[in-house]
Image 1: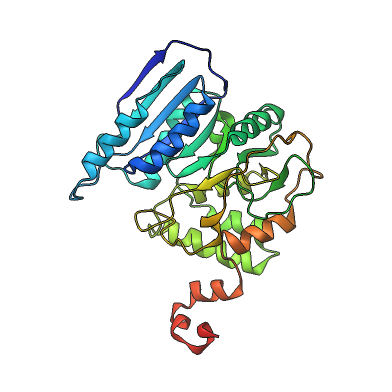
Image 2: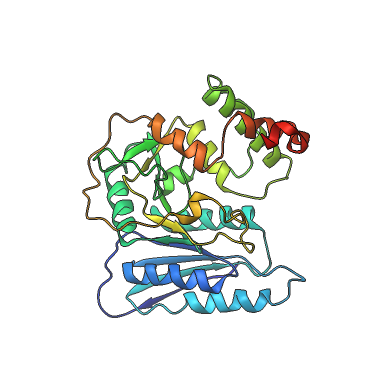
Length: 315
């Protein structure tokens, strides 16, 4: 995975915090997110890219087009690249790429090619990274707010470190483990009082450990739970996922309220916290419904898929 770097001269950058950009084979969403990054003008840009898959018509050309697009940096910026020569898959490519990012910088804002941020997202992340740099109770900054409800505070705390635009510090990422053999024990400690969440997450991580899910982000949630930490989340939604559709890896079903959520631009003061450093149960319950689709019925279908053919499922 060759890496490289180049600096561009000109007007000083507007964003001191490094930005990590994860790309692959979708030029159009990549272009839109890259325009948002260009508007933010980070002083450091780190680009992670996977290689084309063998036997996929036109994919090598799309991968090359994406890499050319993100090379068009026209503001003062130190650009570092970590491009895979062959396809590694979602889980291995993103996790190894982020290992590389946090070996270069002590904190970063992370965007994937389908996560379109508002300008306020960058300010939120930079503010939170500064506020909580030395507070090990906080492991992540997330740009998503799915609840639509605010309390007037500048941020709240959550058990869910959602990855549609997020940020963290190198010392927190150092605790990340791609392999999750301890998942059952961590989930038991975290969720044993909540049978629905306990059964749901045991099933998810069971499939992950059996190789039935190729991802990296569930393991980041587990990192927070393993370390008794939480994420900070904004009072409004600051990132729009523009990747829903048939060509997506994990968001192929576009018929969901999350696909319609827009990124808000706000001049809010993000510094005031909503209560003590503990997860906001009401907001997290909304995430359970809208993001995880987590309820007794969905859990029953995970364990007994034949129920999908029954009258019970059609009720």
